[in-house]
Image 1 (cartoon, one colour):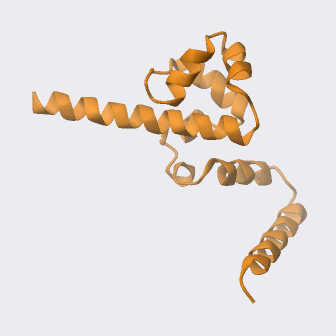
Image 2: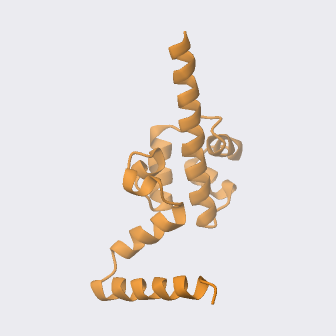
Length: 122
């Protein structure tokens, strides 16, 4: 019975983590729960429950959310270890940067160095 409780706790934690990633992605993109729920054709309260880890997300819902949010499903499930630990905004920027030309990525790199230097106290 202890294994069953542990498994349930692990599943609850995974569901909360998935919901948190989905919520962060939605907020980062400036989308409202109402708009995303309408896109999925589910009640807004169902989306809220998903984001709070209180409802399981169906596979097709997750696929539609990933497409809407411009991420791979593996990012949200934590299976993509290279990006799962990154905040959504950083992963989003990295995915967008991947499609830039080499010259544009170099410029983006210089700009991030500028921002980092500007943020350091004098």
